Length: 87
Image 1 (tube, one colour):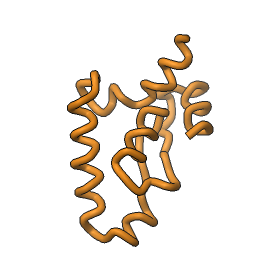
Image 2: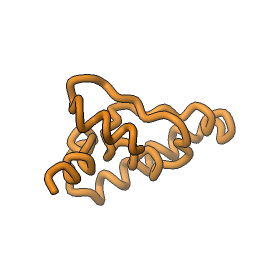
Image 3: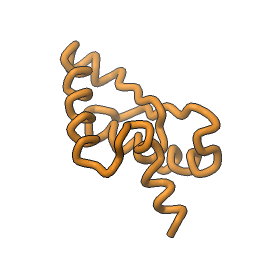
């Protein structure tokens, strides 16, 4: 997450950043999105959790987005990193 956040701080939305590694839950995916990931890869968890893994991530992200101040997932990308930079 720290590397992702640092990369996003340098490049912003000029390139696509992919959050990978350790994405086992919607919370993991949400933290990567807030750090700056445009895409999130959940390969190993998908193998172990099965085909309903994607649905669980989708539902979890939808719930987090609804509870957040962001209107779209695109608005959430990098939000925490931008907040840290503003301090």
